[in-house]
Image 1: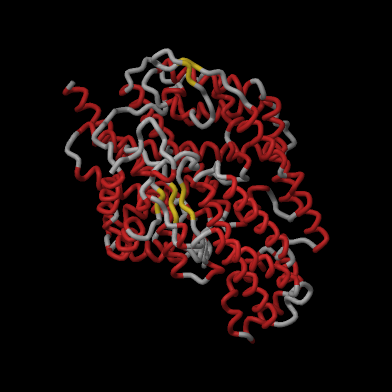
Image 2 (image 1 turned 30 degrees about the horizontal axis):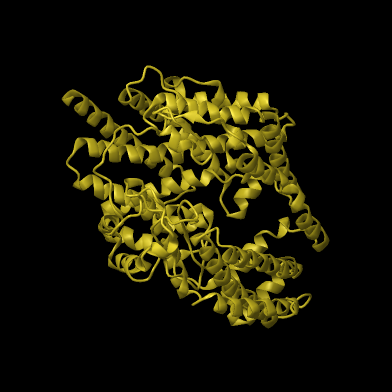
Length: 610
């Protein structure tokens, strides 16, 4: 099987059908999509019939919620089909048009159901309770109505809600401006690669350039990127300031004590989860700094700079795998999750057209897992025959299997999962893959290579995201105290934070004090900490699966099936991980230390051999 990684990118028509996803399982063709679109468009006015009547009776409330869900389920299929077809070839104007229309229909649906929440909340808690007790079918929505009731103190009058909705077009501007400046307007000076050829620098290529073995190339790429950001630091500081003020405005308007309180309350996460993550990670920064010492030693550097943090510590060609091999490795590695998991996943990979494997002209870049409640999962890949691609496939399969189990076990209102648990299943898959590969490799170089993969996971997902979370907390605190978020203040605070995390191992180039200016997650309102908590939960779950076996697997599969049927912390608790306590973060740090010791020992042995 050709893996299409040659110099010429093939046309879509050249890719064999068995290596494409089966989008026709949603709609056989665009004509069928068009019919579904028209039917749904004509159904939107039916939602308006419930306005000012939604809470007249228990039956009326149930009928209104059912109508909303039935339209929403069908709308998801329409959007997913158009999205996937568009991503197969983004230069195809026909499918661009379909995707635009699907998004516009989604916006019209959102507008059509915008009265639901304020209207339900116009009824008293007692009335809703009475409805639930007198009309059995409404029990389906009990949990959803309970969650809505919890937000009662934070939902405003109909008039005020309308004003806030209108204000969002204005208050979303900092994020949009940041995106336009960094994605479209910023230009970077090109650099010379290791062979002296001109090579472009961009946000997208930055990490790839920092993985270059030639330190001069890494250094030039690093400074080229930051020169561009430095030229706009006042604008970027002003945008971030605008975003923080926006977060505070909504928190004040909705009667929350802070922007963070609002962001965490939305997913029912106690604020102590945030604080204890920062505390435990801070208590273990000496381990992170020990890893940096190992990195400096293995790369044989006198000074360790920021641009030295991504280059691989050891090279190994033994993990250059084609798609067929990668599938076999993953299926083997995930066997601890039981026969049912393997059966579903294998049929998705082999028969049901879940994965769009190879790159083709115009295809959307990167990788993701998609799908809807009424569809099978879909995975976009742009296969390169290397270990990263194999890990990416395992990761996306984790998301897809999470969705599969949730969709099959939960009714539609609870057929999704929150961002707090979204990265858990994908990371568990990666950890099981690492374990399986380590078990079967004899070579010390390969063992070190695999250990470094995992140590890098900790670096990027626990230490780095926690540092971001700490910075986000800091800038909101400053704003609450009336301190100005000037470029000077932001740079000074960010540099201090870096010194705390990275310690004495690093040489601190001035440019790193500007890193805050290019992080899109700072426009996502207390989002990044969930990467670190999710990773820690995955460490605990994968350890349980490997050490405890069947009982842990049973709990894990129940977690995959739980969807949105309970608070995310409760769902994880039932799986055996209590994220409201520091223990899982501490356990993740212990695992990091164990793997670090192993890597240090292997490095000693390898360099003795040499």
